[in-house]
Image 1 (cartoon, rainbow, N blue to C red):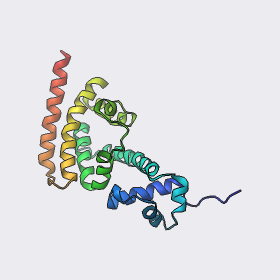
Image 2: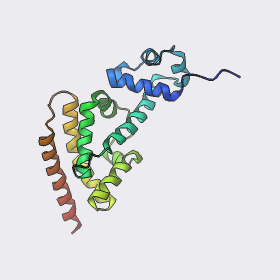
Image 3: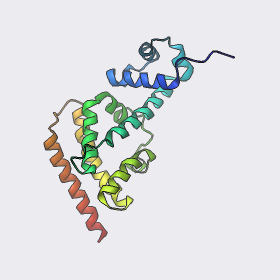
Image 4: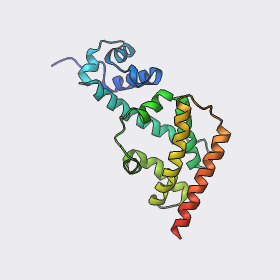
Length: 189
């Protein structure tokens, strides 16, 4: 029986996420991950046949981390607004991870319809639905409006072309959110 591997798949994914966090997705390679783990490249190549396989695993891990980040509410604002601000904060605090999630092409979803119906988005939609008191379809409509607005802000900030002014962004986000809620509510009548 071969000896048990000391370097696990999870350890490799965590180390690779740190490489992305520090230097961006372009820095992911077997040598960089092995260096993080203080090991040879053999365990990395044993667990991941290709770097593309590793990047897909990292993407899934970062996506889960991102969802947890969004759901961490301070309690100072409406949960829907808090999710939006957390999305922007993620772009500020984790710009390389943000770019990897939203600008690398590793997302499973290739359009808005796929994204809005993805399993990964459901915890966020359920939190929004609870705050809005709307059915899930109406919640998705509000989400799409707010998400496009928030993603625009976050992308501009993550790419270092706009400074973050939380109060100003919160003001604009609240206006976009209120407008979406009013529009969706009026459509019900």
